[in-house]
Length: 122
Image (cartoon, rainbow, N blue to C red; front, side):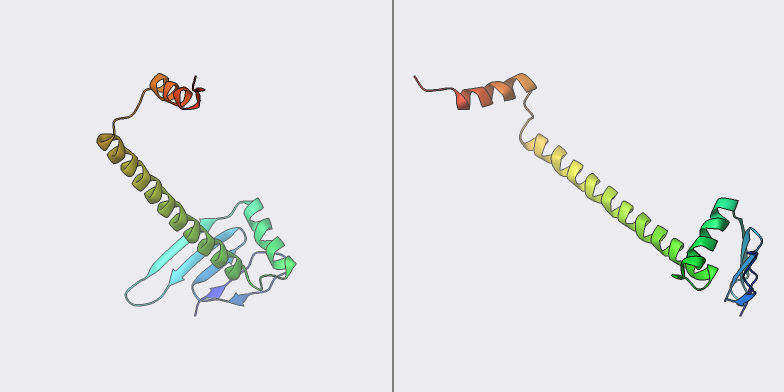
């Protein structure tokens, strides 16, 4: 178990697996034999203040919870965006296939067809 060192003024040292926050820097260490990984991230003062505000709200107990939630939401957003892009690409492909089967009309022909439908019969 790694220790999380929190650089926020009012907070004490908290034990959290893998994460370290020292002043405005987040560091992640994994000590497993297969995966010795360290990641350091510099936080802006706004980001540090955001984490502090989240902790003060009482919704989160540790900086790890704030960061974990943020990363989970980012992952969900990226997955949803990728799904949306795939859906749009599928719809574009379907539209292209449909125009190959039924050639598109130019604007003038389309409007004239609509006008013909609504033309009063004499």
